[in-house]
Image (cartoon, rainbow, N blue to C red; front, side, top):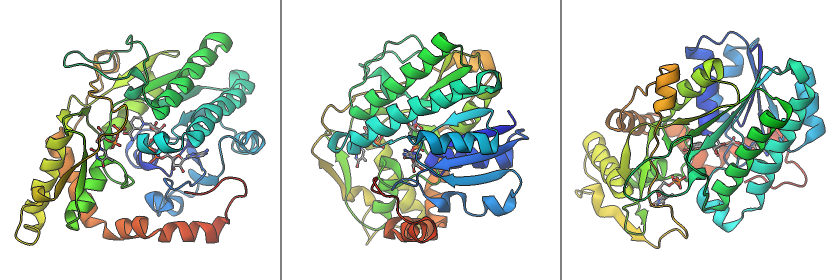
Length: 357
Ligand code: NAD
Ligand code: TYD
């Protein structure tokens, strides 16, 4: 893998992955990061990286759905491998406006596969980053394995499921060298504050109510983002071509316990909020429609075959994450004020046809 295309590299996981590749891993090649910079794409996430790695890192703003422009990028950078993160990623948004999910997650993946197919023997790997949400919801027992049938429940998870199927089909039908990872909920630095953990950290910090959906007892299996990045890299290097791997942190938690823990850590780090524990700011709100009850991942295939193990427990990872949001107020203030978006418009202009954010 000499010339790696990373799609969606200005988003939460993609940016962490590019940092991991360049600063921590044994990857020796170069990265071209293609991102449309939607509301979720933030150039601050990779501030300084272009300067630090002028020969190994480039950014191009482009919509993965635009076949001709993407073909030009493949040609110009002599792309030989792909790690595909670009997606619309937030379940709540998919419930209100599913269109962009169908377009980017399904059509966008299809366009990339078609270009990759055109590379023939020049393609080393197409790695597709997916989610455990494609498997649907679990009862009290058991966990998702690579054999669990797909039963997606939201437009987001259905669109990811469709893209997984396309990637698999291109492997079976055309012999594309692909790998797929299905990962549980991530948390950590640079996560856009619409997702539960950063939203709760920032609201609790500022004394705003923290919305907990339904009875707060839905369960997610949390994984620190750096552990996800190391798993993806292990799969890209050593994973069996044509195979899928589940990635999870063995950290099942009820949402209400996650929110309470964040409150307690903030009380410890910053003191009480107006003499009250932050837990008093928790507010139960109307449940999400079709809200999946429980996710849990069995990652024994990944551990057994590739020796991967997560390094953070939820107890250690969440403290690091809260500390990161406290120590990076500038990033937080810019993401919240939309200042970075105005800067992007200045640099790149707005794109006709597709609204930004
Ligand atoms: P994110 O929303 O933070 O980032 C998505 C990125 O994709 C953004 O930078 C955005 O600008 C870019 N993008 C969107 N549409 C595009 C398009 N048409 N063309 C080019 N770029 C486009 O998402 P994330 O949380 O970093 O998730 C990354 C990937 O990992 C997604 O595929 C998601 O399904 C998957 N995943 C996420 C989680 C999680 O907990 N966040 C867990 C498992 C899997
Ligand atoms: P989220 O971070 O949106 O990830 P996902 O829906 O992909 O799992 O939500 C995580 C869990 O937290 C999920 O069960 C929904 C719940 N949640 C809330 O209770 N309140 C909120 O404000 C948000 C955004 C999510």
